[in-house]
Each structure stands twice: as structure tokens, then as C-alpha cells.
Image (cartoon, rainbow, N blue to C red; front, side, top):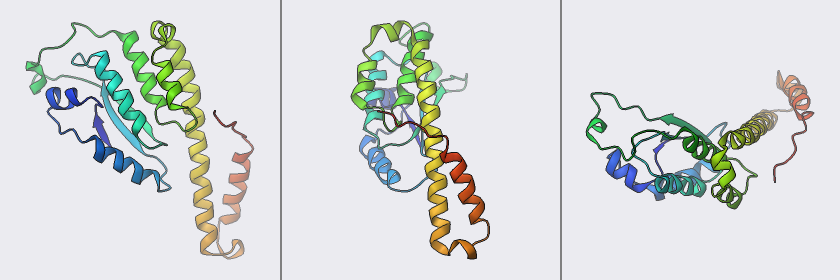
Length: 193
């Protein structure tokens, strides 16, 4: 699902896109009720047209979406034929450390088990803002566990679905699914708190 930005100003004034936060939140609620393998929201980042206030607004918007979901970030590229070429950038250059900091926070928003207030607290941490590579290490670890857990949940759902159609002896391949699920369950992922 393409969000572009969680900032009303950026959506309307920069990208000239409709701003429909309530509809997006309702959609995320609906999607969270279905056993989907993946829900992904797409955000444009690395923009010279955004301020930190816009980035904070995007973070707060993402925190309102129903979990679990993944964030796919796309760096803004302005092509010569694009209308954005005529817009005046708010900054002359991209602060890579600052963008890494915000991008890592965006990735945390969809992870079940990571408290939303904790993410807000991280967003005000001056050490992490100065050393976003430390936050990046944490985010990589947490999102890896999150994706593995979601894969196991998906396989469990598929197994339960297969078992509900017919009994194990009558359904070809179900025994192999059970064995595979049991092997994966031995990974014993610790719950995030």
C-alpha cells in the first residue's frame, strides 16, 4: 500500500496527492484481521522537501497503523521530466545520518512486541540520532525475528487450514507439513517485550 508520506504537508504540497489518513488507518485495521502472509506499506524517504517535523508526523502516522506490517522505503529520485524539479528544496543536501535515524524508526513501527511509546522514546534519543548505525543494528535484529515469527505464524495457519479440510491420513502432504512446522518450531524464538 503506497503511503508516500505520513505528513499532510508533504502529501499535498510536494507530491500533490490526496491526504486520507483515516481511510488508510481503516484499511490497516481491516487487513490486520486477515491471516495475510505480508502487509507492506510504502513510504518515500530521503527527500530534500521534508523537515524533521514532517518525518515525525510520518512516524506518528505509522504508529497509528494496525500491526503487523512491513515498511518498504523508497528514496526520492527527481527526474528532469518530473514536476518536482520546479519545487524549491528545503535543504541543499541530505543529512545521511539523520535519514538513517528516521528510516530505522519507520521500520520498527510495524513490529508486534515493540512498544509504540518505546519507539517514541527512541525518536528523542540524542545518542541514537548521532549514532544511527547503533539503532540500525537493533532494527535489523528485531525485524529479522519479526519476519521469522510471521513466517511461522503463516505456516501454522496454512497447516490448520489443511487440517480443517480433511483428516491427516486423507490429505496428501499434510504429514510433511507437520514435520516441517515442528522442525521450525525448534527455533524457539523469544517473545519481544
